[in-house]
Image (cartoon, rainbow over all chains, first blue to last red; front, side):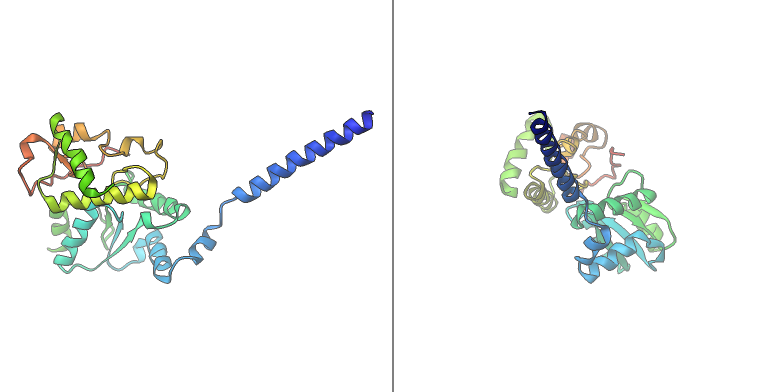
Length: 138
Length: 103
């Protein structure tokens, strides 16, 4: 009798451990490299540039696709024929945008948009026409 | 919901002293971005701020965000320039520089 209780107990424990094991296995986040591989070549290149904007020869912008200030910044730069590279953080899968956000916060601890890194390393946050004009057009 | 419906809904905020920006193009673009966020996340996250895809975490940035009233009071407009004060309700070119209060 005691042996059958023991067997039932062991079986029960095995089921519990099995469930925990499979749950933890499934909840493991996909490695960043694997997520990156699923992106287009252009998205991958932009992502890598965003992590090392100091290697980008022109202005680099961290932006949101929905942000009006980012659109105005683009319009201003286009109008004045200023070359720039822009990444829309919100269009990347969450694990990647978290990494991008960490990088952005190195330059702008508030993490606001747009965050503009000029080629000389100077940072401008938000759409500030006068600051952009002075930094890029003079 | 459409941007036009949201426009009509937010128009009621005028009773509280918060007016939609006179620049209709800017206003509709911002409302369309809000609708995009509604479709993507299920709530009207501020289009100028990154959503966490979690309404509880983003409760402070759901439009009208908790910073709107103080920004309108201090700067005459909210961070996104969607809402402005009565003083600036007829100014199409009113886009003051406002620092994001988050962070």
